[in-house]
Amino acid sequence: MERTRPDSRGPAPFGPPVTDAGLPVLPELAGRAAAAAGDVRAQPAGGGAEVLEAACGYWRRRSLPTGVDRAAAAPGAQPLLLALLAAIGGEVLLTRPCAPWYPSQARLLGLPAYHAPAPAECGGVPDPFAFLETVRRVRAEGGDPRVLLTAVVDDPTGTFAPPELMHEVCEAAVDEGLLIISDETYRETLHREWPGREGVPVGLLSPAEMQPDHVVVLADLGADLVPAAWPAAIARFPDTPRGAQLHAATLDALSTLHAVLPSPVAAAVAHALTEPQAVTERRSEAARLHGAIAAALYSAVTAAGAFCRPPRAGGHLYPDLEPLRPALDARGITDSVDLEDRLSADLGVPVPGGHRFGDAPDLLRVRLSTGPLLGADDDQGLEVLVADDPLTVPHVAGFLERFAAWFDDLAGG
Image 1: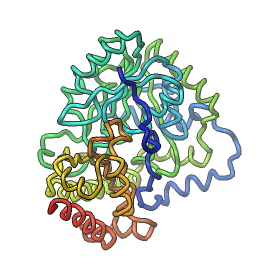
Image 2 (image 1 turned 120 degrees about the horizontal axis):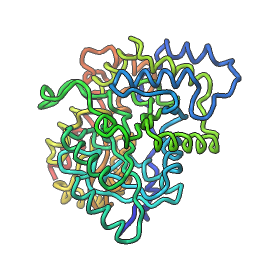
Image 3 (image 1 turned 120 degrees about the vertical axis):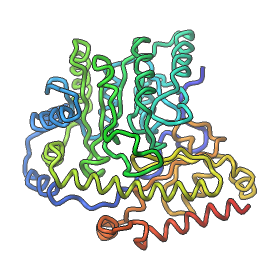
Image 4 (image 1 turned 45 degrees about the horizontal axis):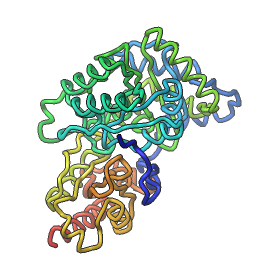
C-alpha cells in the first residue's frame, strides 16, 4: 500500500512560515523568564523538577494522576514526538488529514507512516473501520504498525471526535496491540459558541482516561499557555512497566538530541502550568477571539458554496472548494498547490494546501488559520484583545472583507 511521502510539487512536508498568534506576552510570564535569564545551569533532558511537578499538577486537574517519573518536557512538540517515535520504533498510523509535523517526525527516523481517512463528521481520529483495514493491509504486506497518533482537537479541521467515536477508535487500537499517542495541544481551546454547543461538556475527554495503560499524552504549550515563540511541550506516560521503559527510552533520545528547555523558558513554563488566573483568563479570551474569527471565515466559505466542517476549537478550519472547481479552473487553479499559491498571495497570509496535511493534491482543500488575523504586533493584538467585538477591529474587519470578496467573486464565476 502507498505510504505517506512528500509530494513532487513543492516541499510538502513543510508548511509555509508560521505566523504568531499576535497576542502580546503576558507580563507575568515575561517577568518569570526575565528573572531566570541569568541562570546558567543546564536543564536536564526531559525537564527539571519544577517543570515536571507543575506538569503533574496540570494533569491531575484533568483527572489524569501522574508522577514525575512518568512525565517529560522538551523544547517543543516536534522534538518530543521525534524522541517518542524513536523510543517506540515500528510503523506509524495517522489520520488523513493531519498536522504536517506528525509524518515529518516519522520520516526523519525512516519509519513508514500510513494514513487512514477521518470520518465525515470530524478530524483527529481515523474512521474505525478504515483504521482496522489499514492495519490489516500493512501487516499483510509485512509491516509492523506499533503506534496510532490521534488529536483530541484536530489540526487542520478545528474539530474533535465525540466521546463514543474516540472510545471506539482507542479500543480498536488497543485490541490491535498499538500504543496511542494523544496530541492534546488544543484541548483547552473550545470556542464559546457554535450550533449545538449547548450539548457539549465544558472539557474534552482524553484517550488516557479511556485506556490509561496504553496512551501517551503529548501537548504543545505554545497553543494556550505560553507564547508560541517559546517552544515547550510536555508528555505523560502510562503508569505501567511498559510506560516506564518508554519514558526512559524517550529521555535517552532527548538527551541524544540535547533537546532541553532553556532555563528562562523553563521558569515561565513551570509557572504557566500551575494555571494562575492571568494565564487562564488569557486562554479564555484567546479562545473567544479564535472562535469569533473562525466562525466568520466559515460563514464566508460556506456562503460561497464550499464544504467545511464547522470549527469548534483551536485556530483552524479546513474547507473543501470542490463545488467551486469550475470557477477555479477558469482562473488556472487546478489543485491544492495552485490554490495555496493563489490564496496566500492574494490574502497576504499563509494558506497551506491540503497536500501538506496528507490529502491528495488534486483535492481543492486548504487550511485557514485565525492566528494571523489577531495582529502583526503587540498594539494590534491588544486592540483585538480588549474589543467587545473583535470582528469590528480595523485590521480584522479589513481582512475579512477581502476574504469574503475573494470567495464572492469565485462564487459569481
